[in-house]
Image 1 (cartoon, helix red, strand yellow):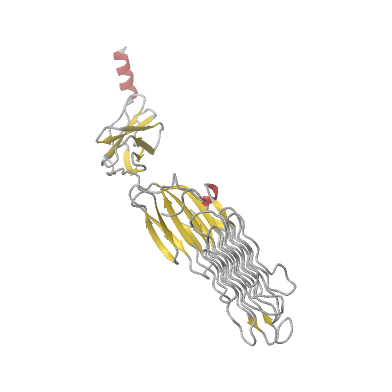
Image 2: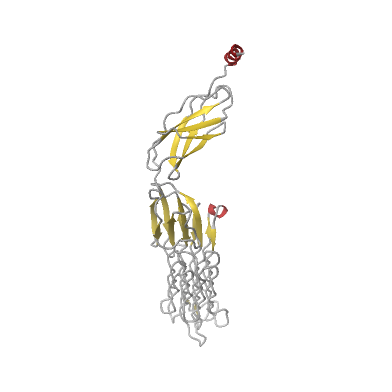
Length: 395
């Protein structure tokens, strides 16, 4: 029988597989790594059924049952020890030759809890610290500016009337938990400037991002920023910013109120509308830990003012909802965020509040007030710290 098997194998030309091509080894936890490989050019005439990765030192193995290329997980490594890996393929005849050795990796012990917050406009590189493999992240969009008022000698209303400015939109909010990162790897973070209407994001605009609120226009209020990105189908949560209040034509009507920033599970409050017969003149309440909208800049006695700023949202986790502003106050911040400013300066509250719209002003056109910057906050270890409210405060 033995001779017959040898005769069959020789006649059929079936042998063990060739050596796979080694790929990249990556530490994924303090005691595990992944090893990528490419299938060998020859399977020896028999379908490959198993690949085995082996560590050096230690001879610790991991397997993957497949015929083609793939990634093998090797568990049971020792933290602080440097390892390389080889991969072998197996078919019905047996196990083939080993690949070349991989790059060297050193699993490390999990890092202590930590965080990094980005609260100024700019593009940054966040480098995952040693021992950090998972993070949880919240992104708040930048608030929109309030709209300008315009003076017209002749327009669609009557000669010598004015248009008030609408309130700026609130920034959106999105978060994700347990996002995988590799220690020592750099990840991009962006916080857009006020008035840009751009996206704030972690990693990329295809990972976790939100749009800022748009600027208010003359009469029209700005739209609230919205969350977006492919993370929506893989753990995305959050809400959209509120809409800025609008205004109407007349020199006795105030600017629209700025909108509130989004919350961790709800939409930011809308800004108050700025006309004498328009309602509501007060901003609306936030929901789901979001911020309230600012009041319109009209006090009910024929006096026109800037619209009040919308409230902002905090980045330390979900808290109470913000309330809408009542003249002349700005909207209250949600989740510990700052309140919008009243009509004296009318700026949006941190983070993500919309700015108040401009009041009419005799014979001149004036600009609206500034919205508030958004922010990005990253916390780790992500498996135990998660948004909206599980241990995401300091550190």
